[in-house]
Length: 396
Ligand SMILES: *Cc1c(COP(=O)(O)O)cnc(C)c1O
Image (tube, rainbow, N blue to C red):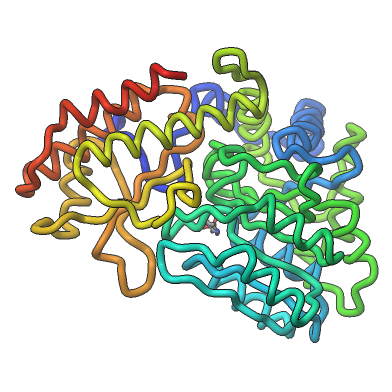
């Protein structure tokens, strides 16, 4: 690894210079005035980035994406409740395991690797046996498959079930309109499309989700209890410090810088989240054009279910999984496969967060992947792949 190596895995990702500056210094006290302002502003900006309603509740807690998933499960389900999990890969498995540990019943709606269950199939399952909650992974990091979050959220909304989306590989990159779609919890972590170092568990809960928590019979563990955390979030939003468990102060400063950058960004005539979503769509299209030019196939089967935040690319005939290291030797770190049993058949390239605003970094990634594949005997033109990506970038 060199300092100028590019980190193009599905998290942690490259962070912007503004985020690096904001987190470069001694950690502030959680009761420092400037820190309280950072925390309060971050909460306010989260509602905008999540496209959530004014009466929704953002949470910022030290931790990971896995903790965020656990928090949603613990606050929305009682033992004995019924949940439906839309299964698209590795992280849907984790979600189902957590729900079972909470003592709730799970029905998984499955699909082959690279596919998402049809929304009609999910609808049939919900109609057969009413559920209290519907869980889905917005973008599954193991396959690059994106579910139809809008239709799933609306399905649950019509049945008065809460909908929970694991957005860890999507939030702030893939379009998600929490208020308009009637979604109830959208969870993520700081190190993916949010564009900060790892260490923050982030989520927004809808008013319906909060009402569900207040009716729970079995409270969740104290450290993930929304009831315990809400007064803390309220205090910071009112620009007053408070304490339940120490916030990751340095990371919250980075979060404030990143959310501000996300909301200030513009692309052509688009502003705010529209611009941010479009920049990820541009990156997704540019990368897919390059993979096609390199004669590579993707893991996701359907173009409309293929995510814009990462590419899961099949390793072509005659090449083996050591190509991942060879790509690294060209100065770009990508990730191997993650889907159980298929790990060595594909590799993953994250293209989310800061890099989508720097198209030259995307082209550099295409070149590194192409050159490594050619070294491994794959026949393709790296120049054509780079120019295919560039054409998509210029069309925006
Ligand atoms: C990365 C990821 C997680 C886990 O996040 P951690 O911070 O590693 O715990 C969960 N779900 C999805 C979709 C992810 O991409």
